[in-house]
Amino acid sequence: MTTKQSIFVIGAGAGFAGDRIEPAVNMARSGTVDAIALECLAERTLIAALRGRQASSDGGYDPRLRRRLRPLLATTGKRCRVLTNLGAANPAAAARAARKLAQETGAGNLRIAAVIGDDVGNRVNDIEWMEPTAGGEWIGAHAYLGIDPMVEALTGGADVVITGRVADSSLFAAAPVHAMTLDAAGLAGALTLGHLLECSGQLSGGNLSEPNQPDLSVAEYARLGYPIGELQADGTAIIRLLDGEPGRLNAAGCTLQLLYEVHDPRAYITPDAVLDFSNIEFEQLGLNRVRMTGARARPRPERLKVIGFLARRGLVADIEIAYAGTGALQRARNAADILRMRLLDDLAPADVRIDLVGVDSVLGAASLPLLAEPPELRVHVSVRCDDAEIAQMVEDEVYTLTISGPAGGGSVRSERRPRIESITGFIARDRVPTRIEWANQ
Image (tube, rainbow, N blue to C red):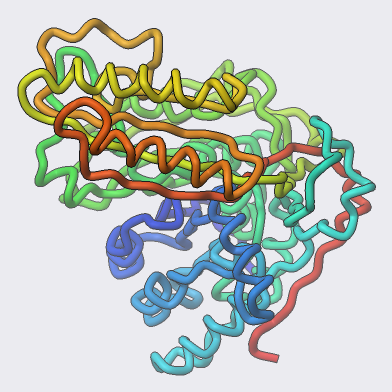
């Protein structure tokens, strides 16, 4: 009988597809973590993966898989397992690629498992969608799986578990749930810790600016340590960095991350439980060391969340033109007004957005008044177009400003993107069966 652990150490090795490689490698080499989770699958990443799977039956997983896993496989195994959603739209193909990589790097004895079942694209009519779906072409639909299939893979001896769409908190909670004996409070703690760790460096000082405190230095940001969680069976946890790594892991940053993407702190819905964050407390134990207590949860929901992707008719044209030097602000504003006059004669106002990068492109009408004129800025135009002919017309109007508009316009950049909408839905659990596929067999 396997002895259950009283403390489990899980590292946040990545928080998005393009995250840094070395934090996870440092964790694995430290010998102080039991497992590392690599969270690499945002919704936009999944769209690209679906396109890749359409192009090839062996495609559809994250193209960074080899680069991300190569330095980890030598330290992976019973000492440090890896769980990751690098499988994206094709976890089985990703597991086969990881198996091949393991053989190349002398780690061919590793057991690599793929979690199959999140793809519900053939069951879109069984899903209760929160928005209308008529008038579009389905690209794909994926359910957010919970911990159960990952725990099954670990119980079967997996050293590396590769998934598609799973809830971020579940990706981090699966290994401690497998290794420990947890009651309801323990599960709540594991999932809450997973929610805190899921954005990697955002918890340890990244994307954080506090009043009356200097930001981290350039060197500290460049070598930022990523967080590690030590979960205890009662659901409490200590969050820390590796010794000597730079960062700012404190109660303020933990509180901000706790509320990240949360609509109701008393009812944060995951596939495994409905979490209640209202009793969470963070205690600073020392430099870059915080204790979390107070995790609570109610039973899991009856349905699973689904993310669906619809291709709508037409495309989005995105164009910019730059202005610089004396009077650049007024010339850019004039250019924007010219484009409004030209484009709104033929296009609906709801389909056109025009703003000035460096002035009001982020906050719009809530932008603060300028204290000084910017030395350079860009006019940005984004238009929903029914077809390529309209997109070409929009691009031509911007390019025309270089010779028939305010002086000095140039450095035009244009891009066309398909119109893809992300739609949320819900599906009954019994309509989402899962299974484990072993790359070694």
